[in-house]
Length: 184
Image 1 (cartoon, helix red, strand yellow):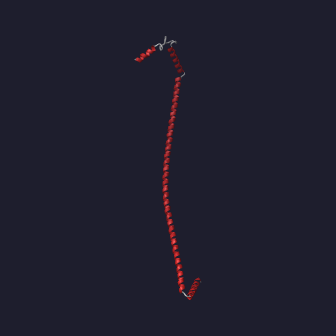
Image 2 (cartoon, helix red, strand yellow):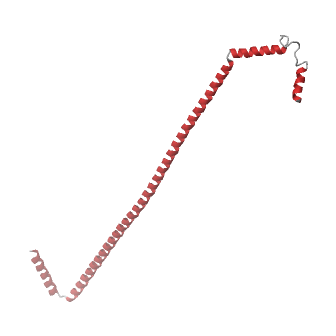
Image 3 (tube, rainbow, N blue to C red):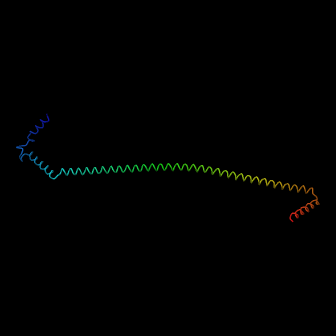
């Protein structure tokens, strides 16, 4: 209530009140009202509200188009992301398969190397045993040859001491006749 009385008091003051009749060109309020109505009429005649509405509609359509484009870009980005994630999973699975195959191959190679080593060791052991047997046979032969040589020398010495010249000549003649019989 106080506000209404304040507004009426201000309207009644000479600065806010019109001097003279309301419908008069000397009344500034009336002139301002006429100017305002002419301005609004010109705006309506020039279809400014329609232009403003059209501009707002065009702007709304632009925003809607940008939102649609953003939505399609987002969907495309999600599709690409899903594709990359799928490819990443495939690559990870493939790398795991490669690692598994490499481990299996390394295991097989290790087992093959062990087998090859066993075979090589067996060959070397066999070769060493053959060399030992050959060395033994050679040593036995050398010992026999030396024993024969010693025995022949000892027999020669014994025979030389016990044999006379006549017995020696008889042995030589007997050996010659044996050789002649065998050769003919």
